[in-house]
Length: 305
Image (cartoon, rainbow, N blue to C red; front, top):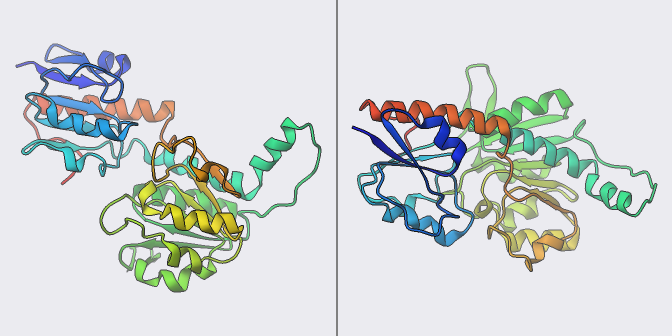
């Protein structure tokens, strides 16, 4: 039996098409027509919020495979009995790499240097550095672990991993629990958020959280926008007490007239941490393997409960 699969790009269609797979080009955000009947949807996260619900109107749908790790956006739109999987293993490296870029760019004042370049203004800057800083990584899943491994060679004064619960790893590393944040946050020069968005993480970074961060500290978010209370962050940025580097925001996409764009000390990239050619290669490999398993009647990999 031929497996009918909706894919978001011609590249994916070419990669998966075979004797038992009928690849149908349909993009959840950009295709104006309703989705045709299909067994499987391969999709990225739609840019526009209102397009998320399109998942629930695909005739005959049996499985959704996400070209990402995060699944928070789709859970409320999944039809009953439709299974869900993600691309765990494809995006963690790219996201951690982008996190490093945001940290270094913000600490070394590269946005200011870029403005000076456009003005042809040769004015050397004195900056903070990752070397000698205390870095708290909030979230010790796939992205958090990859980020943690990249931070060490920059010789920070300390690295503090924080997860939902405290534990000691087999290598002896101490993972702190979120209940310890009130004591840990005042120590950190940089706080990096890698958390997914769910009921327990929504607005975890609120006014109280931010108030405990030390003056001049940098907040980096490469997790999900709603983990951070945007209004509370705006207040701290507007006062000049904290800085931020954000790849994700709430709301998202960020409206053109939103005050976060022009907040002092805030560097923003448009949710692009995973957008690399290497991610596409890895995600394609995972998708091909996933569809092969489904077409053979085997259990999909990386199922999301």
